[in-house]
Image 1 (cartoon, rainbow, N blue to C red):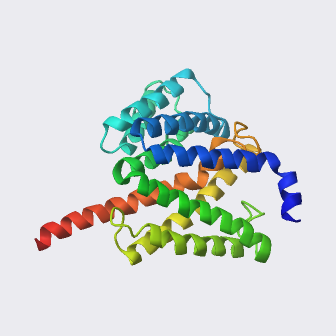
Image 2: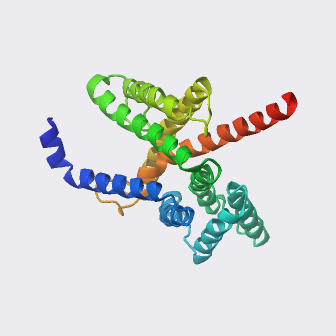
Length: 269
């Protein structure tokens, strides 16, 4: 299938993709903390709603209220991710008290809540540079895997997502690491090529499994897409799945790198 025919068959998908890229570029360029928090928050609530359906939870209004509370707590907490853990603990305690414990009611406060908070934490702790690094690595992983799989894919990667191939995954991983290693070695990020390479590799690998996890949830729920808010792309989680896993990995590793740098400066000063 040539590009012209491919574009014609997926016109809506390409148009939506271009609009999303332009909007994202503008938001990152403006770099207003409140704007990024609001936009991410809207995405989070929409993704939270999709997760409720995927997990088969009872979407009671109190769940949405608690989800909003989680997001309101994020900017005033030095460790935003802990907001989700705190709220999940409250829910677990309440359900146990009422003797109506259903573990799946807590699941939306784990995914996508914690990953969305991780995306926000990346911005809060490492700025726009960290978000750009994350998006570039994840996007190249996805694009490289898609086109690499189309051109060279022969070996199925996993039955969870039959269309994905091992060759595509390797090509996407290689391209993402090659580019991401240079982006991440900036002074405000890792400041070191080898460290940047290892973190980029970890982000890319996490992105692959983030995509697989979303595919697993959809297969388990017997749905094609997590939602339909993005014409040609599906739902918020359909577009954010790889970024959500990648964000957790990036923040986790960068936080340890930050502590290591601070400890080293104290030790050797």
